[in-house]
Every structure is written in C-alpha cells, then in structure tokens.
Length: 121
Image 1 (spheres, rainbow, N blue to C red):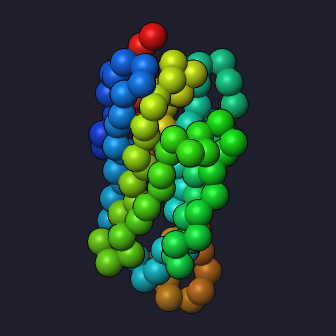
Image 2: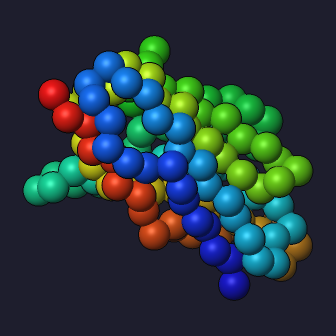
C-alpha cells in the first residue's frame, strides 16, 4: 500500500509564500509523474503543476511564474513552492503520483489526503 502525505498548508496573507511538501511511503519501486492538484469550494479539482521523473515541469497558466514544483527521487518527495499568493489560490491542495509497486512497469495512481491553503486579502 502506498501513502502520500502532504504538509505545509496554512493561512497566509496575499503576496506571501508557502511551501507544500508530499512524501510517498510504502512498497515503491519507481515513481513516474508527480503532480499537485487543487480544489476550491464549489469548483472542480484542477491540475496545478506536474513534474516527470526526469524533472520536466508543466504549470497551469494561473500559477505559472509564481509556483515552482520540484522533487527528490531518492526520497520519494515532491514540493510546491508558492510565491506571491493570491486569494484565488485558496483551495485544498492534493499530491498525486504514478507509482510502480510491483516492479512490473505498471503504474497505479495515488492521491494524498489534501492540505488546506487559505490566502487572505
């Protein structure tokens, strides 16, 4: 069983910064893509940022230039540095990863439990 555990959420004023972290644990042979999603009240969950095992990144237009995703393959962790936060960034942020648990080259998708980020104006 694989667990993804997020940390680092909280309350911050507009213009401030937060750093989210996510650690994967369990029987893990390889992790392919890792992602951060968010879901605001009354809205659909949206992809914020993704990073491949090789370090290639993609960002939603709304966060490009303000957020940075990074990962440590040796530690099975992914982070999201969020700068110049805006009230519209308020949401529950979820870690997501494609994990090979059987060394069979088949990747299953896992989610963390989410961490709340609240940006006050």
